[in-house]
Length: 140
Image 1 (cartoon, rainbow, N blue to C red):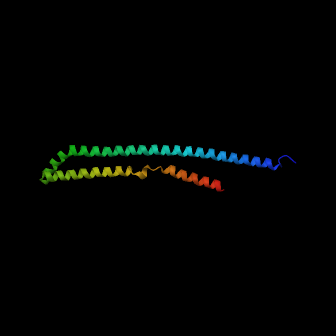
Image 2: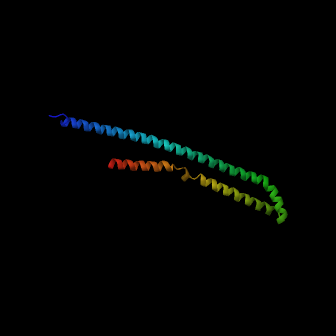
């Protein structure tokens, strides 16, 4: 019998190549999972930074609202009272304007802090692409 024609040798080589393919697939899957986790961590770190900036803006808006109320209310109320002829009406006008400004800043900060902006979009998209490529590789 010629060398390489023994069916037992071909079966052993085939099993060896299957084991090698499975080992390669497991290593690649492990590497891919590590890379996906690293991407997730990097994206979440960016999202947390954005959350901190949004929270700082929210605190800043509250500080500005309080400071504005404390400093300007007295001066504006007295000045407006000379124009409208009523101190309580001028206090109401000034307070309303400052409240509108504070609400606008708070609404802007809330939009920055929404949960949809914190979701790891790039990681999700990358995992979908990797899963699709893996399924095409396995089926093809």
